[in-house]
Image (cartoon, rainbow, N blue to C red; front, side):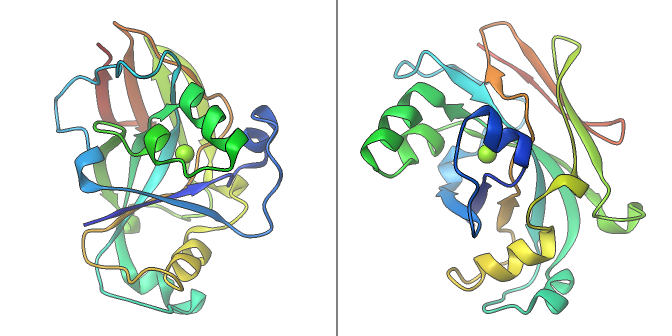
Length: 203
Ligand code: MG
């Protein structure tokens, strides 16, 4: 399986990192080795002193597809989840300055937290899902899918122009504002509409 991540999909997050507003979705990949095993702590890697949390809505692909029309994209997933795109912001800033690829900052071991999934039928509207990340019990990021620049079905269509989507692939749909550094002993908990979908200890 592969993990496809969307960058810069929420205006306020674009502003907080002083990034340019993209004219099409920003895409990068994480390998399956980036997945943090269930119930494992997240260890801050030696090569970074500024790891940020980015909480994101996840979509699990359940059908093979390529060049998917946006109006059929809904047929390619049944489950919505929540995760963290851990980012070595110091490493990423250096790579961005030089126009280099982001993998060292984004695709390292443990950088993809994948929480539990919920059936999409459990939501009234996928375009109005609220989610949040708590750090040590305090809300640090709160988002709603209504603020996405590109909606889930548009993202699936766009991504599938480049990459064949396969069963089990996961799309990280971008983070809202509030990204910040994690420290050892932090406890990160992710919620969709009040349901806890993951709990991660930082070491
Ligand atoms: Mg992200």
